[in-house]
Length: 210
Ligand code: ADP
Image (cartoon, rainbow, N blue to C red; front, side, top):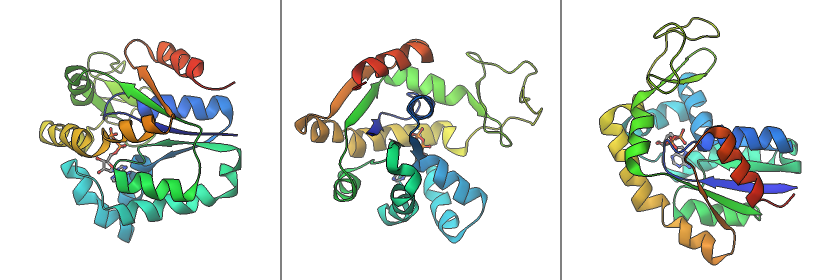
């Protein structure tokens, strides 16, 4: 049983590392960003409400996020433990989470802002299979096309410059204070997120109980 939260600014690689850890340890990977994007794509009432906030790079109201998350945390698949990616993002969400479940560790991934901006602004994604590329660091074989299925790659609306600036500001103002919150509870593990995904994964493994 392992219950982990990934904390860190946009572009730091939380999604990549959370998915890897979940696969390695047979945990449920819950990304509120992915769940919300799926709701937007399916144009559910919740998705339609979340869309504008997400495009602007602002936080979706707590009640909407709570609704999308609570049922999945309660699902039996989460019994072996979970990796939360993108939640909690402010003190109110942290309080709600505390009321739902205990945690074993909070992994804080860290990178300088300049690196985050470079990663986010160059990111392109495949709308069909969700593969992630970067225009210079991880380009597809054929420019603008997914290697797996040939779909035309797109930029996430919130990876445009104005939205990136908002996301970083929201992180600093609302999410970064959780560092002290979890530090005080002895749960925080700060992980440098530079280097290859393998190197970061090794640091994460070393910081968690076997
Ligand atoms: P990133 O961490 O790179 O910004 P995510 O995919 O985690 O990307 O989140 C994308 C967007 O989804 C956020 O900017 C926000 O609008 C919304 N979102 C995701 N998780 C939450 C959350 N816990 N609370 C409020 N909004 C959220």
